[in-house]
Length: 107
Image (spheres, rainbow, N blue to C red):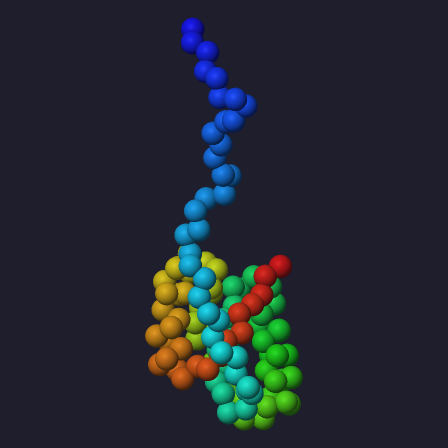
């Protein structure tokens, strides 16, 4: 049996993996929602059908010309086909003239 002298130093592995996603700049925030089109995205988990109605009401009170594309247009963002739904969003947003999105809810 051989003895290895490492002078008290040992090889170790960093417990975190290598970064897989590079950070990118966030999109510029809209200055106003006036005249903008807002998409509603919902995971069908928690009362979005009610919450989005309240959000529309409150936002229309502040921005009378804001338009909404209902969550019904997009389907669930958390379901069997969520990967396809999410992958289709950039083109769908472009086709529908969407300027911003509200994504919710969860429990």
